Image 1 (cartoon, rainbow, N blue to C red):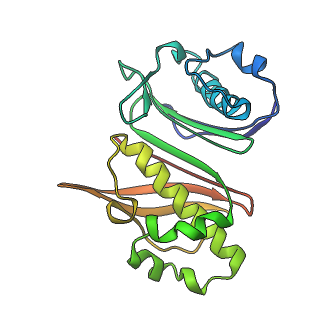
Image 2 (cartoon, helix red, strand yellow; image 1 turned 60 degrees about the horizontal axis):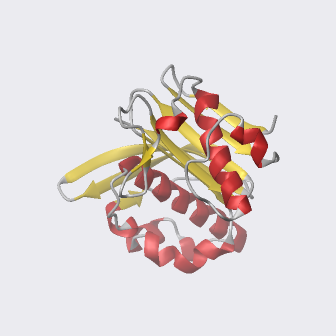
Image 3 (cartoon, rainbow, N blue to C red; image 1 turned 180 degrees about the vertical axis):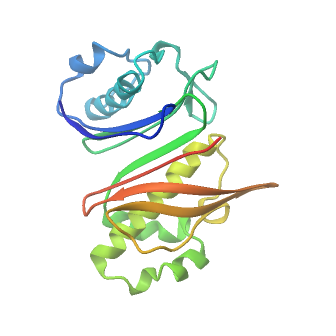
Length: 211
């Protein structure tokens, strides 16, 4: 079973990362294909992400998932809060019965270097010393920061967010795993967020849970 990572955070919140090696039929035995996805690999990613929901909580009602105007999937009765992400051959999901959640998984890539000014505030670019980092470390750091903001965006769940202005991540020495302090601001709403992460040379994973 290609379970890449699993973490039971507490009695109410669990997450997992799946390395996709199976055909569609494997996932379709457990979850329905509720959206029309034409690209074969994207369809596999979609199914693997949905597969993780009942994998984490066996009573998760996958057939009841709806899609909001912001494109966020949700359960109408909010019996569970959940977030899904996928990249390459990986799918990730976090599920909680008592608080809002967000997750993002990304392949470490040079492409994020080209759009750093779109999602990082000038203060972050300076604090994180992006220009002074060696090439490989710059790509890892930028991918992690992109993951952090994607996870926060999914936790927020209401769209209409300027990634550079509304979300800022405080600088910290990066490890293979750890946490990041972030500030989320949207209009009159402001809150501090504690982000958890795992980072390798190939993969970045960030998640958060907060009511």
